[in-house]
Image (cartoon, rainbow, N blue to C red; front, top):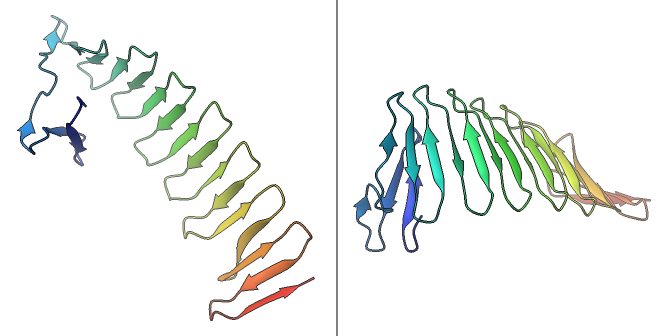
Length: 169
């Protein structure tokens, strides 16, 4: 968005821009799409970004910094950022993310997923939000509704749903 503008996406994927005073602006960039005879719509923005919309609903965009993205007619998309970020998003609700620093994550349509980072931390979560997480020397997991964890010395701790705490060596 141009400086001072906010953008909102609705459930249909349509975007609304608001200027700094809160007025709805249909085209804050002041550009008009150019449609070719075969129905391809091209939008060229003042910053050098180019967005292409094909008649079948697929499209792409290119940014001057080297970031690119594309989507197919069903709405599945891929983004590759100039900073090394890579993301895929599917209409079924699944997605993946990775970046140049070594961070990675994925989410499945049911809400389950996993993540890891360059420092050795990570986790796996089920759709019911029960998770197992770990670090280079410690971790935690859901043990039958209780929160359980361990530390670098191998000590295991738990916190029961009734808020009692305990540990064992």
